[in-house]
Length: 281
Image (cartoon, rainbow, N blue to C red):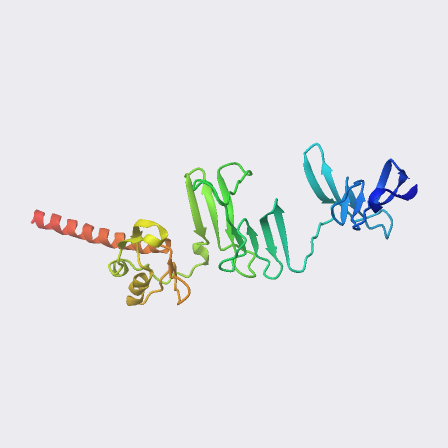
């Protein structure tokens, strides 16, 4: 091997003038296998880092390489060792000059294509394109195709899920279900029926700021008032504040609607029985 200077003040290390292994240019840029480095370190080929303090057994190293068959760059470890990337502030992954994904070092929140966390959510995904394109796709490719479980929900420190989102292929239905095992319930009475339903105020509405031109539903505040009037808890309701909007899910209203229908049917049956009794007199 030899050390020598080429033109322009480069320091070259190699076996001869025509086979430069390492080049250090006048700006202090280092090229390994690259004779014209433009940054502080440029390597033409794979990079391998290994811990050999205890010999070759159990070495936990990292290889940065280029796979010509798959045409991709690889960052990998050996012998089933984990790859940990540890940064103080945040980790950001770019494609070209545009941010593709970022992990905040303080909150651990993740943004994909978004760049901004709005309401302290753990994950914010933003995409552009057609309205028909999904923001998130869950592709279930296991099981016997009779049903597919896509999501489970847990509360803090719980190892048993509170609810799930399933697709039942036999019934052709997508369901959001919460745990409802009767064996674990203490039944305190029937659901409220017409006494509640008669107090609700179904409305049609518009919301020009959101593009809603023909909405149909309830106002959250008046919905809560109906429950308050009969001394019941307004299920499916999130009470807002000066900074938070009121929110409402109609699904918990179903038991009350069923009870109201049963009460109405009982009245109809009683009236029909009374009419038949009067006709037979």
